[in-house]
Length: 225
Image: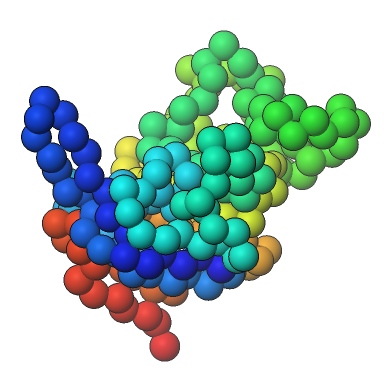
């Protein structure tokens, strides 16, 4: 499904170049749950952003199924992201002026899903994440674990092929983190591809494969038997 060939990413600021990614070659199969691990500044979030079409590579080829992502124009690039990728961000990125129901509804409105169908999908997602009783509450009134479940429900409602999570358990305690990892596994069981960036090896070990990155280079790929 996802194939990166010799991907590089260079940032330029004040006349200084920073090579965040240095010739990344990576293939991730459909329905695979993969962890990308590395220290701060290793390039793992940059890699996730390129896979998620939140950023563009400086060089190399990114292919998603038969789509040559690196060759898309700006409009097609945005359409590709909307149609194929969902994000779960480290700090949840919920809209604080909207309740839980409205937050989960957002990607459905963006896709012009009819109101009756939206209601059904939202109900299913909230039930799956065990937060149906929180539908009318606002993010500021929720715990960190509850907010993360809302963020996952929103991503699940979008019904894209790929779900990307950037340090999704970074602000959570161990018990809540492990519970959410079970949810990610359930999403993987639905046939979704799940990619998680994390610095926590306990979280990474719950994935089928661990990709280690250091200084913009993949140094190791470990797959469970």
